[in-house]
Length: 264
Image 1 (cartoon, rainbow, N blue to C red):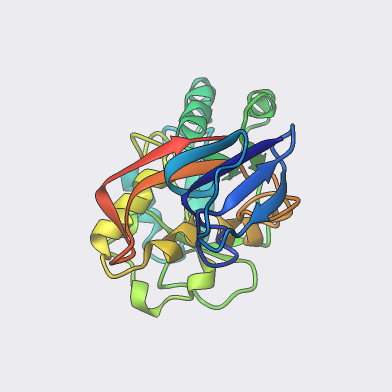
Image 2: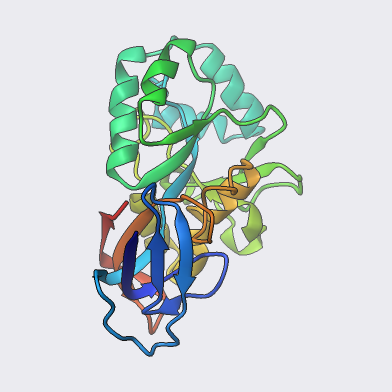
């Protein structure tokens, strides 16, 4: 058993807990979450970290087999029906299989524990099975739209990342559908949900960091139907643990100095 605490833990499915304690079994599955009511006492073998513990990230949009899909391609797809344009564009590209492992390495290095891989090539499967990331191919009924421009749809992912900042109508969107997704090594230097969080915060400083973390974990896990294990810190789940330092609790913002450490 491991017992881990920090200045705050943010279960995502509920409010942040000051000095909360997460208890894990030998497989890193959560067996208990203790609300200390801020009455913190030393416990034997308790690991303490400075910062806020959040679940491992769920990347709603990766294109592992297509590092040749560029930022220009993304922007062209964003004009009109994004989902249909994306499908058409990717069907016109040859898979770039040598880049698949690099893409996986990025996701693992930046705290992603689950990811949607769109239009996967069958030859990438063996690499994904060896990864620490849980990969899922979205159901064909899952529709990808741009955040703030999405129409109401039960299985709609309102995708948000730095490529669409100028296109986003963030005030008018359905926040429960907002999901952070990266893309390919042709659109991003880093396949990092955390870097996207920082860029979104810079663009929309009034957004509370707690809401954005939902976009990076809870929302995509629910829409992709993998929330039995991922997306939130709850008993019975195995979401992984990320530690974020550099949250301003007065303004509820992610600061420019924010850093990420992967605990599990």
